[in-house]
Length: 194
Image 1 (tube, rainbow, N blue to C red):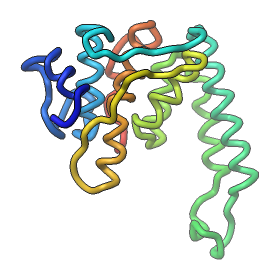
Image 2: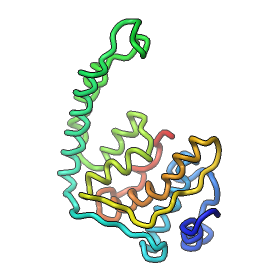
Image 3: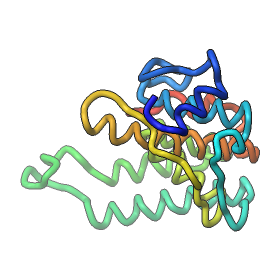
């Protein structure tokens, strides 16, 4: 165990603690630290871990879904204008047509009705949980700030260690959304790419 928060999480979870980079209920072994943090917060809350959170407002589920859709659509339209790729001379070799991505977005947009659906959409677009959880959480909570959350330990190549360092923050974001009823089943967090 490499830091104080890791020790606190291990103490809270006891024999439920997953040590190292091992397969967890969220799929990829690279999310072990996020799962540990989520489970420790679920079991004991923030006080034993000496972590805290600040935000100025909790938005409604309806607001979160609508804002998620607006942001995704704005991003799709902007990328279609700025990064449309045609021909063999473009960086993507001519195989990428952002219009297809936009068409796919319009096909699924109306099916996104819950915050869990927002996660599912990101998962289906090959997002990783390290990107999806903080972004969606920041729509749920205005001016969101996690306090006293150390980097999580990691293993493997340098880039793996770097992204695994976000695991404690990621697990905290997931727990906050669960605690405040945005997500009712933690299955929303499993199956993400790494």
